[in-house]
Image (cartoon, rainbow, N blue to C red):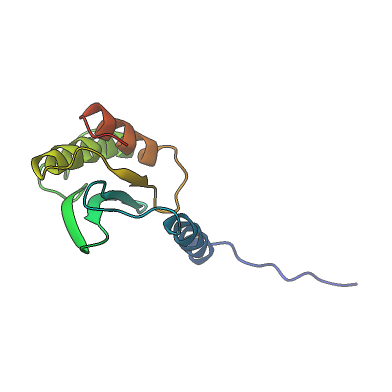
Length: 127
């Protein structure tokens, strides 16, 4: 009788899969000075968004659930992601950025990622 080997699909497997998808996305998505890249990084607890000019290698604006204005805020993680989206859009507009290209960071466009993107659009950032 043959026994199969069970491959653990824990956190390490998920992180590697997200990294593979992010590399695949980054082949096609790049930020320019006219249209920088809005990249979203998601962990189990926090969400971070950055507006990056890839040619110059500079971060133009950023926001996170770890910011003082959002940290410890009320609501679930999706509500906090909406606050991050609005805040990064506000900071990007202050830096002179009107249009961005969206980089979901290998994550599915659902839940917190979609909430952040929708809030950034409502705040006036164009994708």
